[in-house]
Image (cartoon, rainbow, N blue to C red; front, side):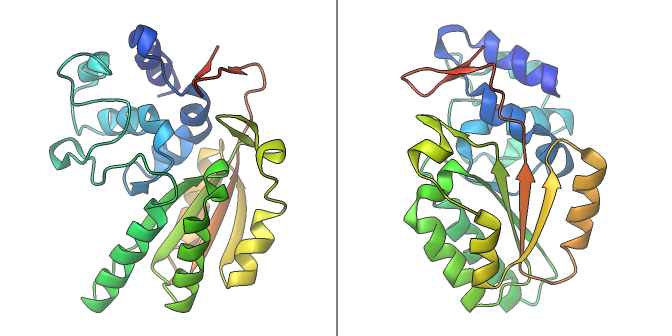
Length: 223
């Protein structure tokens, strides 16, 4: 899947791709190919996961960012290809997930909602409104995953907006917090199973920051 991400991104040529965000989250999506991904800049990782799980042919990844392709630079809802939600506006995905979790509970459905956030995305005030709401409604069917790769489009998260200890922040709102190596498939699968035990959960995924990559002014991470 990592190779597919790189081949897909480079196949897009001048249109570019957000490699760093995709590669820091690829193992998460290998375990959870669906869900709400408001960390929209890692769209290539989701496309790759969907292709590898049979939602559409792997060959279609070659159409990424090409004219008339359905696989474009931000997620657009397309149930036929397994894309359940549109993305692009950072900070809004958690609110979508909260709405789904509330809906499932009111219908007495034993479903769980997974929402993947980037650590840079946690600069958004709407994320913390969502965190407060999730705790208020005691949404034990909601699992929030933060991909903590310590990078965002304008630089390192510590210099753009220092978030301090995210785990402590979520804990203070009433989340059960788990920290895991975001590149360890076995640990990820185990922790996802644990969080299905009807608890409001945060999984903080420690991802490598890919410091050999540079950040361009356009926010596109390239080799």
